[in-house]
Length: 248
Ligand code: HPA
Image (cartoon, rainbow, N blue to C red; front, side, top):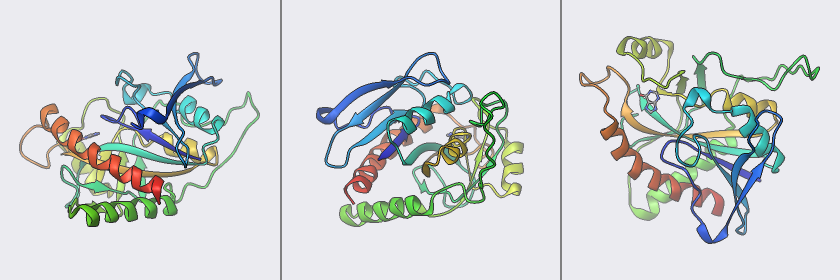
């Protein structure tokens, strides 16, 4: 079954008439994890990473509870939706990026299911953090939506996602360093989500919506107003992309 993880500005799957709210208890959290179960021809589940009202900041998301809850509901593949800042040419506000690599700059997050207590040690291969097949399905869906609607939403079909700790945005110098490291986009939530999915044997693909140029790419400061304007419109487009993935 497909699981969708929604990021900033993406707090419900929609599909109101087919939707059931469930809560899944896990050993990683006191509170059960709220999940939407959408019972259409191809049932799927949806989880809002920041909570349904965006009260959980990136560094405090319980990534382990989220992935374990999805695993328990029978999810075998995840499409993660992320708002990011653009660093490389072609990744400006409004564009969609399907990254094929990541660099993890986060710290202090619970980033593994391995534990001595559980006598569970697993050194997963993580050479290619995103599932190629899911990425291809996303790219095909975007091409279809662009063709059908005569839209020309720019899509970048590869790239390196640099994952920062947040919740603050980066300094211009940090973005310059990340650019030298080879990062094309910057966001705060792909890790440890991606590696926990790998440990749980769940395929993981990611679609990123650029909502701003990263710090220092333009001479001006990054404002929340510009981010929110791009986000509303971009997430509408992503809803159509997801519907197409589910249909295909
Ligand atoms: N940096 C980090 N995360 C982000 C950004 C950014 O500029 N924009 C959206 N998420």
